[in-house]
Image (cartoon, rainbow, N blue to C red; front, side, top):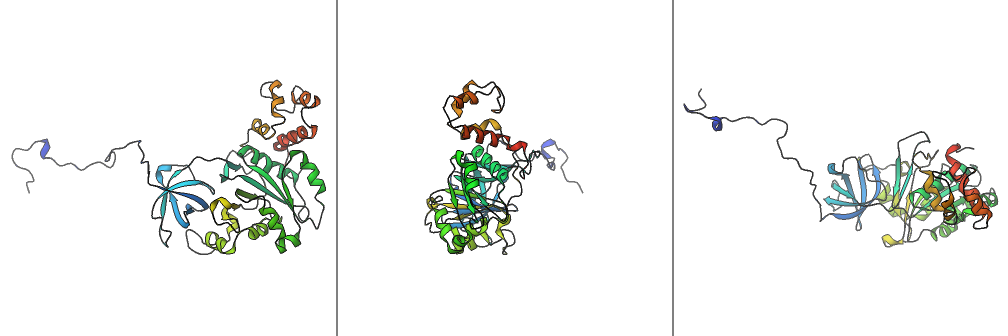
Length: 340
């Protein structure tokens, strides 16, 4: 069967387009100026639960973001179905600039950096005074990560009915860190939560601590049961209930009627807190009383060597010697294991 006439030319020939280069490519990405602003509450296997206005919206990351991942606490821009109804899915098209970042590695030799929380104002380090015993080196590492990431630390000591907090307070007294001491009876009665809440109102606070210190019990006392069940007990993929301490979860502070009233971010219990990503030269910024004394230090000074100018600065009375000791202890924490 003849498909063309007697006088054919190239314009008459129909060709099948190839699989490649069939559509024009461009580096210009859509601006999504009409995107709604939201906050990431939790991340579960590629699905992100976000708060948009007063609605809980399930979303996924847009392909145009590439490998950039959103984490709990991130401010994001979303498009698509923002109704929050069942079986709907929005799309995160932009991650806004972060004002703080809590990061960790699995250990000090692991080059892979894990972002735990974004945009938190402070880091509540929860430690028991006994059962289990305090781990000062883990506390030191959390402090270094907080100072490096732009978070203010808060030390929460539990189980004071089993041991005195005096030794731990003396160890960290020179750092001038706000702290709260609680007992098991106070946690059960709710009085401990009230004292902790005073430090949380109007702020976004990430809680960190290892298993058994009472972190989850404290977080449960700080967060309304109804909101915790709504935002945390639904698996974003299967729709079924799940235990939420396996991943970070942002929850509104009890009594909060607006976002500005405070947020609590519960994180999974940690066994280690690697600092491979930390530049030790940034830790000095958490010691404004010592930082001017570093002007006379040699280049790339570790602040723990014979030529360090901080020794003379402190000897001249510009700062408390205990502060210099605390700085050097924190700087040396990467050289020690957390159980030391």
